Image (cartoon, rainbow, N blue to C red; front, side, top):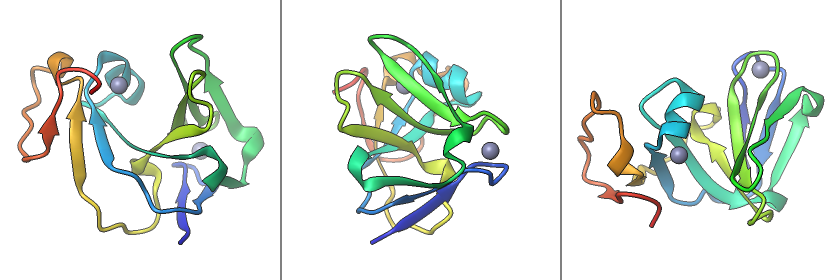
Length: 132
Ligand SMILES: [Zn+2]
Ligand SMILES: [Zn+2]
C-alpha cells in the first residue's frame, strides 16, 4: 500500500510504501517545544519505505547530536519526521502531515511523566511515564 503526505505549504510531498506502525503520542518537553502543542503524534516506519516525491531540497534538519534529529519544511515549518543516529534504518513520521485517511487509532502515550499539566489524556491507550 502507499500512503501520501505533504507539508503545510505543499512544496514537499512524500509517500510511505508500507503499513503504518503503532501511533504514538509523545508528551516530552522537546516534542512540545518543536510542535508548539501538547504532544507530537508519530509512527515508526522503515527509512527504506519512505520516499520524498517533491521538494527534497526544501527539507531542513534540526541537528541534535546523539539524540533525535528533526526534519521539517524550510518554507512553512511543518515537521515531517525524526530520526535517531543510533537507529538509522527507522524513522518516525509526523502523522499530522498525512493526506490519506487511515483507520488506525492512537496506540500509546509516552513521556506522560512530563506531559503538559494543562492537557488531560482522555482516551484508553496505554500510558508510559517515559519511553517503554
Ligand atoms: Zn512546506
Ligand atoms: Zn518526545
